[in-house]
Length: 337
Length: 201
Image (cartoon, rainbow over all chains, first blue to last red; front, side):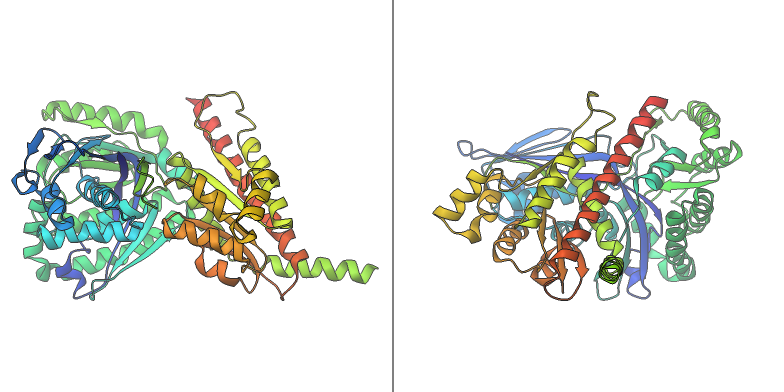
């Protein structure tokens, strides 16, 4: 049996500039960090059972992988030429479509695990590239390349996306004190509204050419955010998040919504320095940076508004930053060296 | 006498500044990620470097949790290879000296572990053999070397190099010890910080 996990991530600034429609014209940049919430992929070879099983929110058992409903598992098995004798299960710390990059974390862990099943160990970078190929080239998802790399490498990282499809990866080495201070100021709420990144991004991509300046400004915020992060200036970081959110909101009308705007404004009024919606938009998670003394008030306000707006799945997600990326937790087939 | 002493201390001061702090930061990230996935650290070296490895392992295993020796929190293990002189001599005598690290390592190394290799020249054949084994499995490698860095500096994911003229084992080994203590102190402070945070809750 093989157990692989990949962390979810929080994207701070620059999200959207990782789309090819932008980075083929101007270098894109994103800064993100992985958190202590993971997706786990379990791969069980079944030498006596020839069928293929995929176990996630439902269980599928088929005699050929092409019959699977799960598009990613189906495409991944096809890509690797795995036709039978396998069970694949997925588990996660939190639900999907929260804006924490979970679907790419899934792909990274899946590709790392399936390659291991085939007898090949992938490096973190290779796992990210395999996940990009799966999602972008094979499944034509209109998404970028930041999430796969963030989940694979782990930690605080700046990604720069070049026109020739290469990705510059610049890890930011943040000590435990700085990272712990950031955790102490950070509030993360799942809005209860789920959306698929592909839907929001699909619409966003159609008008990138009209919004080039906004994208350029967002990419330019990345080094400014990095400076504040290294200096431990939380308030400065919050202001940049806010600026990025205002820019991002105007890229496409699907990114925010009345209720998200209401929640965000209320957070700021209750004492938050700044924040943003995490992920492609339209729902997902709301993040604030706020002085710890204001956390109680912000929390209360959010829960009240969530109740009023009937956001039944609304809840706070406690967050710790992690340095780990995609990794094998168990591999009891020791013939793979 | 005074000249000799001042001269040596001067040299030590100069070479300590040749270390790239970012390489130590990379090493700390590797260790942190290893801790998070419940992996182990394997460390090895020849001669004085093996003594450094042994010293570090005994310090690290106990000191990083010194405030918390009885608290039930996730632990962090570092192991020196070979594990004993019997293992060392068995590999050296039966297989060859070039296998004294790679031999035990292939037996111990798991997918969630990481490796620390110490070699002043960075070119010791038995060290390079073990590092190549780890690299082939995509296991992160921290290298501590000296002189011009050697092959170890090229292979390591975090290459901590004390740049000196060839043959200055005295300086290289001394500064390696400083770096190893830095690593222990970082994790000691980190676990103390976590404990203090928990106590506040």
